Length: 160
Image (cartoon, rainbow, N blue to C red; front, side):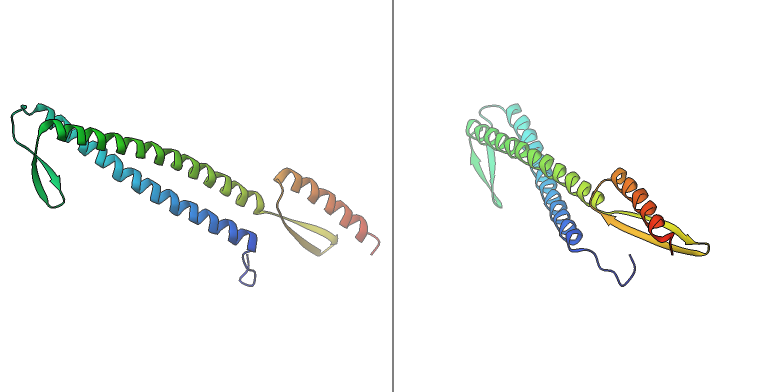
């Protein structure tokens, strides 16, 4: 596009939607990564806790302090936390797939609408006219349209 031309409004809108979807995907991926880390840490804590004897002193983390707890309660808490993280990861994975599919559709729409076809027509010996046509239809239709338009222009200009 030349410096005098602006991005068409439909393209601006599509690019804006696509950018929002990309930001949403990044957010989902970040949340999912955090939950996967939490899930792994919880699994590791459960493994270590299960190795401990029933009469060993155990502590649970509460903010910036440790509180004495019993092994059974702590295992139950960690199992619940692990399942919650797993469920949230599943939900985020489904959201990730939906957003990725949406991004593919948006990209396809943009590419479909961004078809620019150009051809040169020779009207007289040294005169060329460039025809540029941007369309919202597929390339094969554009090619057929362009051939027909070229033939019609030649037909209409032969009498000049």
